[in-house]
Length: 419
Ligand code: GLU
Image (cartoon, rainbow, N blue to C red):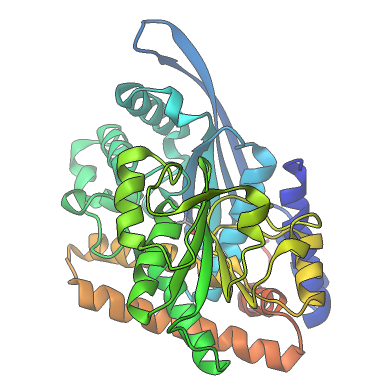
């Protein structure tokens, strides 16, 4: 499916919610488009001495609630429309989570497994240099996303600080979040997206007579979000029946131990070949009978083609944009509830906000404090969306958008449009 559709998807989702809540037409016009789009082409010297050109992006969708915030991904499918869509989702996500941030996203179009660590470091540093003052600790704050991690954030931090005058440097540690702990990261940031997702599942399950003990579920993607979600669901007694990632899919009816699988994936780069499960194909994976499905990989996985295959009651979106418009419609027709990405995966950016606050105040919070604050934020977002589901008699995605749009509309009305 073409990537243009991802941006079309987010626009269609937006229009639906804007119609239902009767969003002010002027504000609808503002939010229908991105604010700034930065595209940089930059050269990097490879290990063998030759020079390769790369294309990097940073799209800032809306900044009315605060500094732009959102991850950077390194993936061959990164292009301007994908980044526009992801930036727009960040605006809604930050608004729903009650954070003082606007939405942004960026990335480099490339396949990171083709490069050595040293090359990845030079690519990251040169990209940071190319972005220059388009990012900044009180302006636009990147974070990890697909194929980027704490190490990549440490390289961005170091490059950014090296470009600052010495007396400014210690005031800029919050230019990125998701950093390694020793370099100013926060405890609990690594697991935060999975932790937030689990808080949402637990809250929804309690409201819907859906016991998690013994509930069977399947996960697509076993990177940061998929693996942490599964590991954190384990204490609730939920049974991981099948997992799929870019290397293949596996099934074990008796349940897969998420910690054991996470250790295997760390050592082998993917779930393929995991000895305590059976290899299955994509269709068998998606049609596994289970209670819920956590897509935690890329966009456009639940579509007109695949939505009819699912045999679950609930979809909990860990990835950004895993369900396209037709997929959503089919799931709704089939009575399958979808808890949307902009609610379920907001835990990552929420703990990014906590990291940013700790950096600004030169504080270091313990894990209980981070988890407790995350729980409060996620529960408050959950309740707002749940109430909007009832108030507007609509699906959870549209309700989540309405929560975001109400907040943005209020701020625009208070502040007005310059000049
Ligand atoms: N990339 C993550 C997301 O999609 C986290 C963003 C952040 O922490 O700023 O929400």
